[in-house]
Amino acid sequence: MKVTDIIVLQAIGNALAKLDSSVDLGELEDEIIKAVAGLETLAAKNAQIKQLYETERRELKKLYQAQPKDKGFDPENDDSRDTDVGNVNPPSDKSENTNKSADEGEKS
Image 1: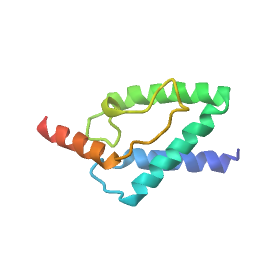
Image 2: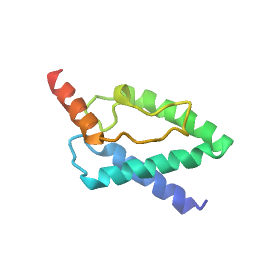
Image 3: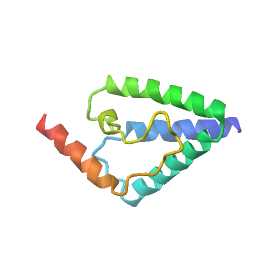
Image 4: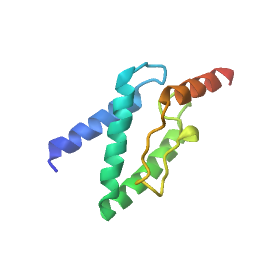
């Protein structure tokens, strides 16, 4: 893997993390979900990458839990599994989960 590949992955991840949850990505959101699922599948194929990924993911979840809830990632509604990166079927209706999270945030 080239250094430029790592930079691209980190830059895209950072950009997506900075998006406000109210940003409507339209059809692009489905493509992002599929791409993420593909990356998780690849990570599961190598024991060392899988272990590093799971550790990093848990640490990131802790960081996001400490942030205000108006950020794009809601760890309370995270439907992926920490221990089974092979199970990466994306939810069939992501917009329903997003709308529910947004509605709950308004009630608080």
